[in-house]
Structure formats: C-alpha cells, structure tokens
Length: 206
Image (tube, rainbow, N blue to C red; front, side, top):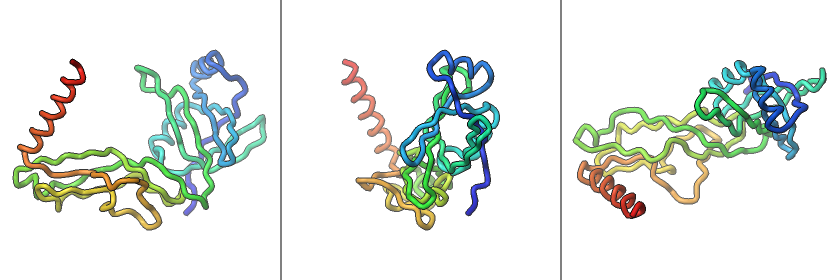
C-alpha cells in the first residue's frame, strides 16, 4: 500500500504566542512534528491544504509530511495527532503531527459508525450507543478510517461489545475490559437508566 497524499509545510523559526498569532494572520497554522525517534520540529502549514488533508485523512490515515527547511526538503510518514481549534471560529489554531514507523504498530482512536435498524427496535426496544470511537492497534497503513457496526441483528437485551467487532485483517482492538459498544433495551429499562442518571446529577448538585 502506497501513501498517496502529501502535505507541504515549512520549518517554523519563531515560537511563542506572538509568533503564532502573526502566522495565523498570514493564514498559516503553527504546529509541531514529533518524530518517531522522540525529536520535535516546529512547523507551519498553509490553512487550506491542511484543512483539506484533515478532512480526507482524519486522525487515522497516514500521509506524507514534506518539511521545507530553507530549501532542504525531507519527507516523513505521519498521522495527525492533536488539533486545537479557535474557540468560536471554525479554524485550526495549532496542530501536532506524529511521525510513524510503517513497520511498527500504533494505537489510534478510530470513529465508529452505526448502520442498520435492529430487530429489537422494530419490536419496540430502544437502541443505546455507548462509544463514538474505539482504540485500535495496527501498523499505520493497515489502520481503518472508521469501523462500521451493523446493528440489524440486535434483539431486545442484546449487546455488541468491543470483542465482537469485525475488524480488518491485522487490526486489533486495544482494551482492558470487554466494554459495551451498543445495546437494545426495553423502553422501561431505558427510562430507568435515564431516571438513574438524572438522580445522580441531582445528588451531585445538592
């Protein structure tokens, strides 16, 4: 499998809030590239290409980061590790890139997408989903962009746990306990769970 996408950035000279603010005024996003060896290199990325590659790659898909250091260019396979956003504008304020070794496993939070209408819901139950993402471990190029969970076969009082997930080859779920991903409850159980949650919140507030 080849790495198809590349983001071109420049090595960043200035650090601190003042320098970062000046970069943002120039539609550049300050960031840091953390190498697989533990070094960190300050970089700056043009906003629009960064937004585009984030939309396509998310935080689970490897792409190449090309760093221009005063005309000397180097290319590194990376994942987007952390993103900071403006408090009220839809804009990046800082981004961290994590350098990966393509032959060594990484552990990443991968989004979960639920599809289908469960048998239990058709019978009057209520589908409860407990996770928006799961931690998966694989080599970087094997990591899926998302995990699709089909709930069609779930009857009332059935549960899908993390150990039940159908994962791609060479991908494993990382967990200590076999936690629930989704369940179908009877409406009375669902109401009781809501009431218990509200009681807990009231008790904490008092």
